[in-house]
Image (tube, rainbow, N blue to C red; front, top):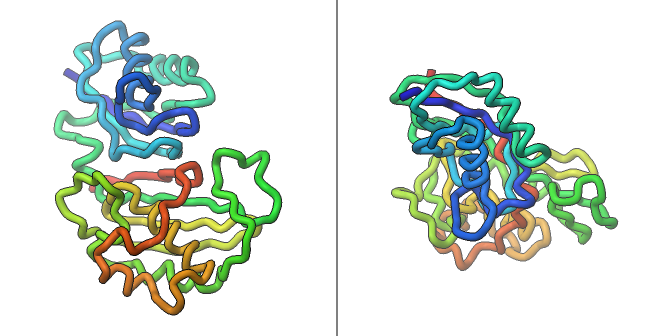
Length: 247
């Protein structure tokens, strides 16, 4: 029973996240439907490196599944990408060892979140950025972002309903990149809690608006109370850039 690994690109704007849910379109649900249509058989255990939320995008999500018969992978890539045109594309498909698991074996991920910082709303970037028109202390946001690097308890930035076994995560890189009219928050970590990146972005914006006075993100981590931090940033500015595996 071959284990097939996929690298996926998708626009999450028209989907209710990755995970299958009744009566709504999801990435997992549509992908499984089209895979089975193309293969002519059931696929088993379709799973991604993480469950992106409704409206969140991916440039290189990693997923895997098992199938009884080894397919023509080149044909599968072309067929699935055509049937889900402009929404989901398979960038790569290959056979991997049976032991490979897209979620358990991931060691690092990078997310980026784009803010469109300009008075008029976006047109060409609509659905891909969070538009902010009011004043922001961008210099302060740039200083605060790197303070999240290290191993911390991220309970303050954990979304409700998170089923993670631990709230302790390691962040390797955290920065705000300023390229007017864009502000891009880029973060690399060992793993992320539910809505963690969006909650960090929401809090950085709140700090930029002066809502917390001189309080820093370091102090906020010590709160270990999600209710005290800022609102969750809009989903459509977030993109999963890549996932890395040992070896």
